[in-house]
Image (cartoon, rainbow, N blue to C red):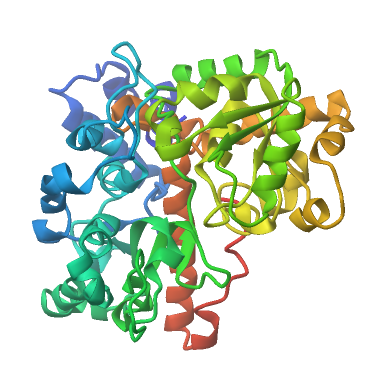
Length: 479
């Protein structure tokens, strides 16, 4: 029971003092007498000396007010900047903005499934944070400062316009200038160690050295700006030494609006009949050079009765989640090879579907998402087959997975579905916010992890231990 409710009802049942019992016992909780109820609670607290715990202690967040050019104005250019994918079924660009960045519903009756563009994680995260308790209007009272900067959207001119390529080192310069000149005490108070923001992409895409010449296409130098050295960036994939960032799960298309909807989906995944041994969802074009994906495709081509291949080229599985989710519900194992970068959205689709993920290197998940998925327990819900063992050692993926006992597969699936709520980005809104009491979702865990990191760094700063500011010991610890 909530502390205030417990305190109130304890006094209703109490006979000491009698006058307070009489007053509270006859009290009906209505809008008209709510001030009186609060007076009763506060008075009884003073009488009995019971201090009310502060649920916001160490968790207050100030959402910095930025000029619209750093966030909402960027959404106005959706016609040219937001094609979700080069695919015939592509969602119209501006339609991706629907539902505060979740995208349009997959069909009219859907209340949990959306066509989500991952680049809109930044406005969606911003919207979810505004729903959160423990927001502080005064930055001096805040434990952390959130910057609602839509960084990946602001990067699009450097990535899409050839004329802007040579200026990609300037990404973030305008924000740095604003923070240094507008209320500079907010930034100077803790030298930026309490600031955080979301970056809807892999950290490597924003970590090109500023002096690179010629400039590399597809990347900017946002994370290389010295003004942002002390900030915490929540990215979809972190680098090998992520002192500046921490990875958060790739958004799937599943955004439940209530706890019953979440539980109903997990129940469906639990009872699903799984007839395929393994599944690969991704690009099916044979690579020019042999890699782990080419070995997977070769195995699957020879055993179509045991391996399902889902062609997700052009982002088609994000546009139409049924395309991949239905086969995942019928598969025991989902293969998650690295592609252009180690991590994949498909990993989190697999978790939601209860399809046991098969990894081929630790960088695909284990060393990335320590707050959301416990690194020391991967053997409980996943399988790892080193890619060198497949490519150089002759290990057959199909044989390896077929040798896993059915009872063990069932145990892994159950553990996976227990973890599924932790990687889901639930829908914004009051009904969804009440779900937090039962289960934290990807946003809740990301915020709590960030607050923990910031508290450690601020403590080290105040204690005069600069060497401890970038300690990573707790960054792989589950929230």
